[in-house]
Image 1: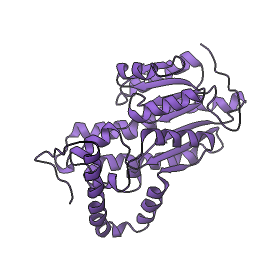
Image 2: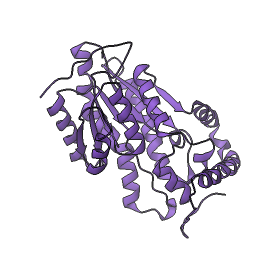
Image 3: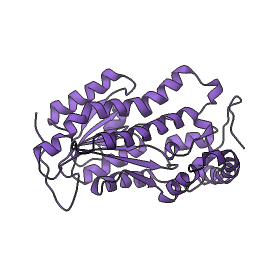
Image 4: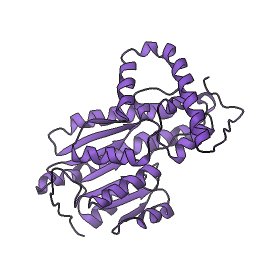
Length: 301
């Protein structure tokens, strides 16, 4: 078992930090891993699929710890912490990135799919944050460049604006944003910083699936961001810790303004859906995708 020493360069940097990244085999997780690797972090990459993790490993400059785990299982979450501590002796950065959206009408949704979204998007980050809390404090206890550990969580703009087509996903992201805001207060002065990244639509396989299968037009109100842009926001929150970052900033500003008067949403949403639908059609056309909407799906016009 080795302990990673932290070597400062200019300001707050991941150089030498032990960083745990969940959902690391996905598009955003891969870009986060690449960015942290380039910044000199020691990586522990977590994903359901071992082969996906190995594909990410092949693109890194140094060996990472690969942990295949099911985040819907509390026992697996405990095992993640045990394996990371056994190998590194400490953890300085926890990146809660794993997420899932299931496109189905709420009124015909299945119990198992509801549980999956809530478990992956909300319960897992809560359990991981609890598991790693004491070890994240090690940065402060050991001194050096990292006087505080940090939790950075990829939430979603759905944590600000409700999405009718993805009600359970919205619930999980509202809850996740609230959890991180609460933990930021709870951990204040205890050696752990808490930051959230709230991206709008991100051009990933998940978004392409939504675009083709009746996902919300609100995802396309603005041009979808790239996975690399989200990763850059994560790195920015490490270099310059901030409670929340919005990707892009304009979406976060408009979303927060709209939610000052939630009673207006029934009037605003039809117009936003029309504008978003135009963006969705442009997105499908630009990528040569064909819309496939199940007969039992319901998407607002």
